[in-house]
Length: 122
Image (tube, rainbow, N blue to C red; front, side, top):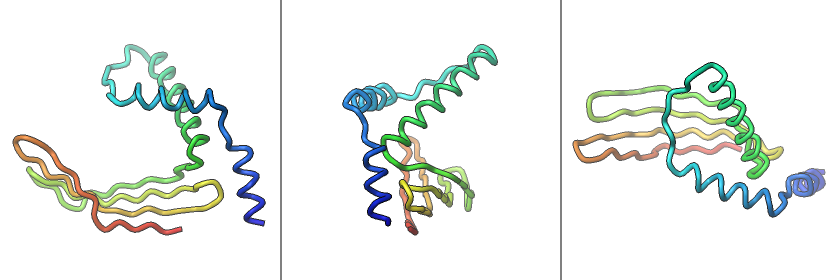
């Protein structure tokens, strides 16, 4: 039964060549995050709709759907920050949970981040 469900997902999840090209263009275009202040509520709504559309496309492309995310700051001072993250979701029909601790260290020249305590539950 799982094999049948997987095959069905593969058939319905296959993307046309145009969609793959669109994904590549999207990824290249999003390499630099733009920061701007929306000028009006209409601009914000328009941007929200576009982001929803992009999220839907990426979900179709990867088969991964995030259902919940949480972040807890464990320790924070001037030079470092330790955060615990939890992401839950589904990859097609397979549920998963991803837990990890992120250590961010900042000095005068740069900021570095290290993932520790990685746990993947399926």
